[in-house]
Structure formats: structure tokens, C-alpha cells
Length: 430
Image (cartoon, rainbow, N blue to C red; front, side, top):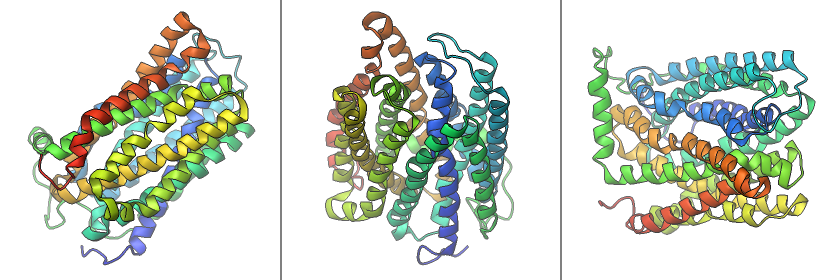
């Protein structure tokens, strides 16, 4: 398949579909944790729902990479989005039938079977997301020329950020105010529309379009080839570790953020939406100018700045007061942190897409993301467990801040250790 010379119609259709799926992800970002907080006030149990969404990265990431390298990536995206649409519809229906919920207890849950069903559905949706994201990320180089990857990834990340943490999270606050079930019904429709858009893409999106048939599967050998390539590339290996530690810290903070909004700020779901929407503003700004930032200061310094900006959010939450002034400070910090996060993502993703051979891209990408994203549920579990233990030792008000203190330490230590590595630049051997 000949690649277009610019960001053409196929790329725009691809981006539109990704925007719709990220709209659903953004709605879920607020809806999953908010619904969980209406069933329990236990931070460890609340953490289990986002953990269920991220846990498939541990189990399914490596097999997904093999699948992506063996089959047409467009068809895999379609299968994943159809599955997610059905799962969201099922969750919405069950919640609607179970409303209204009882008073959430501090320990345990007021409706165990609903909580279990939500968690199980989150696992299914998370597994489909692993396959979808891997297929989409490895499919992009087939849609645009290599010199346009930073620009294409930047535009893609901007649209995804707008739909995810701006439109999606804002919509979630409104939808939750109307009904706890409504966000999941909207997500089912968004996924269905994304399927319709991807159906319109034409071409052969296999890892090796020149091959008439796929070779006989040798899963162990194929998986080993991808892992060996990643471990043999010091830059890729170090970026995977860095990204994993950042995700560990960031997702740890997200566990108690919903409780910070409810109990320390004394505000409702629209406040949580405002925090994520502020992050979207920073992310969109970064996505629009990230290629110019890299051109001006280089990849290494771009990532260094992103590392420093990651420290802003935990510091702001630790020092924020209650009410609207505290909300404004946290919103500003989220904006700054997400600006750095999108710069980091676009630089590191473009580096992977450019440096990894296309026939290995799915497997190496999945091995990379196994650690990079697979660290997220570990951060959530640590945050939930530490908060529960700290509640008994220090009281709930201080305990809710423990994940942010932990994140600050992890991010600061990581920045110091890897500062020199990033200064060498991604084009230089280690």
C-alpha cells in the first residue's frame, strides 16, 4: 500500500475514530470511579475498578503484540471496538436496573454483585483496549510518511486529549448528574460510531503486506524475538522503564483524586471533570506544538522538561486548600503536568515507530507497553492499600494525600536517576 504524502483523508478518518473511542475513555475516566465511590468509600476497593481496566496490560499485552503482527490491524481495531460497545451497553443496562444505590459504607460495598459485575466488565473493556491501542499505534505508520510521524502523532494526541479529558470528562459530569447509567450508554454509541468510521478505511494493514499468507504460527519464537529486540535496545529499554514509573506515580494519584474532590474540596462530579478538562487544555497545546518544541530544543531536552513538569501536580494537591481556590490550583497543575505528558508521549511514540522494524512493531510495542502501562495498576493498588493503612494511623484527611506524597518521591528520584540519560539524546547510543 502506497503511503500518502501528507496527513490525508485516511488519516483524518482514523483520527476521528480514535477521537470517538477516546470520548468514551474520557467519560469512563470519571464514570468508573464515581460509580465505584457510590458503592463504597473504601479507597482500596475504589482502586480495584481502574485496576481492572489496566490489569489486562500484564496478562494480554504480549499476546496482543503477536496478534497485531500476524493479522490485519484494521480488523483487530474493529473487533475490539465492537466488543467494547457491547460491554458498555451491558454495564449501563445493569446499573440502570439496580438504581437507586444504597448509602456507601466506609468498608465493603453496598451492592457486592453490582461492584463485581462492574469490575468484570472493566477487565473485558481493558483487554479490548490493549488490542485496540496496540493495533492503532502500529497501524499509523502505514497512513503517513515517516517524516510526518511527530506531526501525525501530535495531531492524534491532541484530538484524543480533547475528546478524552476535555469533552469526555466534561460530558461525564453532566451525564452522571442525570443518571449513573447514562455515561455507559453514551459510550456504547460512541464505540459503534467509531466502528463505522474504521470500516471506511481501505488497504492492507498487515505487518507484512507483501506476504500472501501468514506463516505457520510459532508463538514462543515470535514473542521471544520481540522481547529480545526491546532488551537489546538501551534507549527503548530505558524509555519503557521511565514511562512505567511515571504511569505508576500518575495512576496512584488518580485513585484518591475522586475522594480529594468529594471530601477535601467538598465538591461534586463537575469539579472532577474540570480537573481532567484542564489537563486536556495542556495536552492539546502540547500536541499542536510538540514538533516545534522538538525541532527547537531536541528530543532529550523535551523529555527532561516533561519530567520536571510531572512534579507539579502532586505538589499542588499537597498544598491545595478546600473549595474553589483549591480546585483552581489543582486544575492549573493538571494543565501543566498534562502538557509535559503529551510532549513525552509524542516524542517517545514517534521514536518507537521510527526505530522499530515494521514487522516487529506490534510485538516490541506490546513488550514496551507491558511495563510502561502495566505499572499503572500496581500504582493504583499501592495507593489504595497505603491510603487504607494510613487512615488507621493518621486519620482520613491526611491519608488521602499519601498517594500524592508517594508519587512526588517516585517522580523526583526517577528524574534525578535518568536526567543524564535523557541529556544524551535519543539518537545517541548508550
